[in-house]
Length: 223
Image (cartoon, rainbow, N blue to C red; front, side):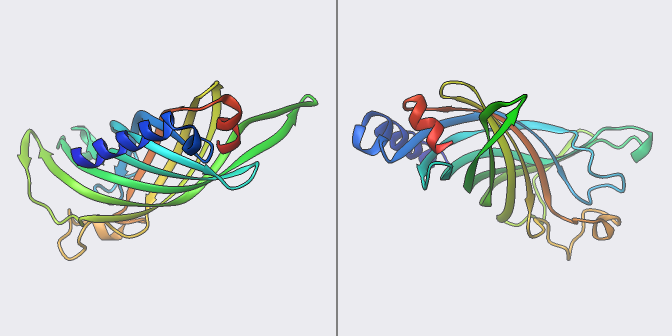
């Protein structure tokens, strides 16, 4: 994982300092937090109690004035957190699933008017991602477990929106949902697991800042 991120930083710095490459590719860095859950962990699910970190880098290339393709490499912490309360018989449960994730996003600039004034600071994005599980652990009432039936690979769909804060700095909100369960259904987490909608899937709301190198005009064209 460290090797991948080192290579990513080298690529980003190379693109950022090379004028020829910078005309075609726009590099950037990503950092923020995520609210996550894993469907089916408990009967009162989709509470997104687990807050974690996400960070990495990106390279974007322009397709047209309003469309671009963005390649990202992220380290992201997913999983679920169930606080000890009366709903779950005062049992504390925390599942940590740590991934290196590679989204490939299609981005489209949005243009509309507010009070007859043009607004072009926002964009919409959609695309798939592939994640590789690099580590995991479960915490039940303070006892740690490093065993589980979790898939090493994750395929997910991403939907998001973003806006310009200032030149080269952007705020992004993204929802990610696994396409296939990340838990082996032959060995359930509990008796409720396989009777839950979206069963076994990671669900993530990500709130990130993105710093994009290059001129504001180039950045706007590719974001």
